[in-house]
Image (tube, rainbow, N blue to C red):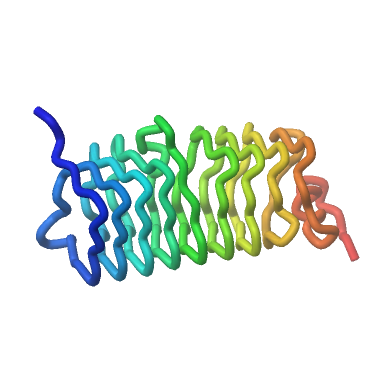
Length: 190
């Protein structure tokens, strides 16, 4: 049975928490001010889609495909992106709240995180090669066995991780952020 395909549509101010979200493959669609909180988005596929001012808090993302998608000013609390379909996974996040999300062991090369709250986010085992964390708050984010080669933390805030437990070759940091890389040594830095 062929999956239903929805293309070039705009959805505005829809609340899918009660009526559910229609199963389909969505291409080049735009979602504005929609509520997906606690929705089951299992096995859905989104290609070249964008979301603005939407709430996805605690939605289920089992085998959900996000291919070249953009989230702008979205609330994405507690999401398990690790459960997404990894095939052609490509996302960017701007001015989003991503607290308590998990990107565990995902390939997120060149992913843009711009002006996002990434508090208590799990990046363990992820490949963040050349990712950008421009003006992001990474308080209590977890990095271990993470590939951060060429990643840009130069304007990021509150990150703390051990460079010896991660790949950091050619990663960019500001002088002010160096304390977060030395925290395991319990140094006093002025």
